[in-house]
Image (cartoon, rainbow, N blue to C red; front, top):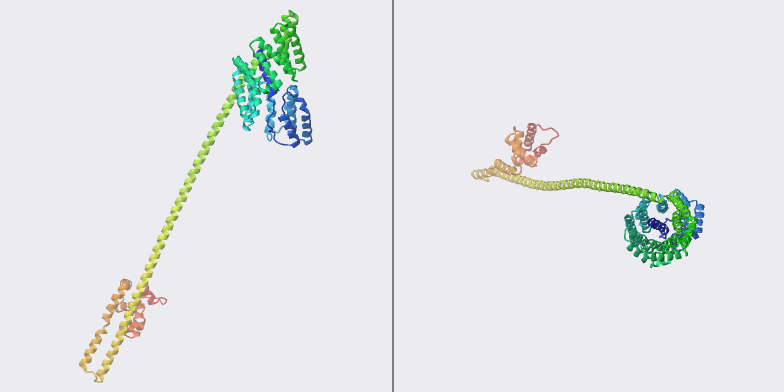
Length: 580
């Protein structure tokens, strides 16, 4: 009974403190409505009656209905439930269910989380621990994702209290320590101090009563325990139950009772009355014990507090038994057992819930493990896909780079080849130009020599004619004239001139005669000679003078040559010979 009472007390304390102030995180919808929400969110509720703030909720309903906004209506329902949580559980449940039906969980995720948080607290209040545990574990992930340390801390507090309620004290203690760490990290000093109450009681349950007493005793010296009278009352009540000596129990019970008279919380007042009654039972002062237990019973019935009523019935049965009034003792004991079975069925319910809770935790942890494995597998697959994609991109990039490089090299080679070809062509062109220049030079030189030879022959022929005229006039002796004529004729030898011409011609056109003879083997020596003169570009008259014949003879020779070569009328002999 003692442990059960301590567990219930901490659940009750949690329900009081979890609804404390937090920074305003609600998404703005309406300025007037939001200002009311901030007042409710940020107000300090220590020693204040919650329902004194109900006019703010009434105004919220008016604005929400005027705007016809379902999400504003959901918020108004939430704050309504928030104010009534301690005093009217049934109406709170109705309000929360209606709020969950109206809230836009997609666009207003924080609204949904806050409403669902209260849903989890209601589940825990009705001993539906597996469902409450799952609810708070989901909220844990959400509050982590938005870095809401305040709500996250109280999520851990709720889970820790559920664990303690089913007897998993070590797990509960672990969650209280997590809450302690979060409150310190967020700078929520008052909440961190209040959480020491849970840590102290956990130490008691874990077999360290003295350490638990030290933590709880130190809490009484904290400023918040002196200002927040409901919290101080709860700490004193816990100290009463964990204290090892009767004087300590009496000290804490009396101070708790005295402090509770200054607050409006009926549940806290009821438990201080029960504690005073139990104290007098320890002291065997039956009348005083009866006085306090009867007051506690009236308070529990007025407050519709079934759990407190069970303790009062048990205490009354104990008192009447000690007063040797077995009939009255039996009646109260019978009511106690009936009330316990019908109203709470605590022992059996706790045992069943403990088993269900362990199974739920195991199942949930398995689900988390499987989800973690799926996430890890998905992560690995994502990384593998990324690496494969990256590798494919690298391969494609390398192939593209290699292709571009090959194209670039091919282009460079082509450009180099083109440059080399152009250079060769330029060199060839220069060589050809040089060759043609040299050829023209030699042709001009050959033609010039031929013209000199023609002029020389003309002069010699003129001299020969003058000598003959002088011989006819007897002005020149016959032997002397004959000698001169022989000398002149020796210089008019066309054969020597031809050999000289042919030598220089073959230097200029080395294969001309060879090619011409191979094409036209029927040409005579004189015709070959005439072709050579024509090839140099000499005119018919010049050739005739070279050969000392008439121009008509040259034309006749040209005709015979064309005939042997079988040239058409459209082909000139000069062009034909030039192309050989």
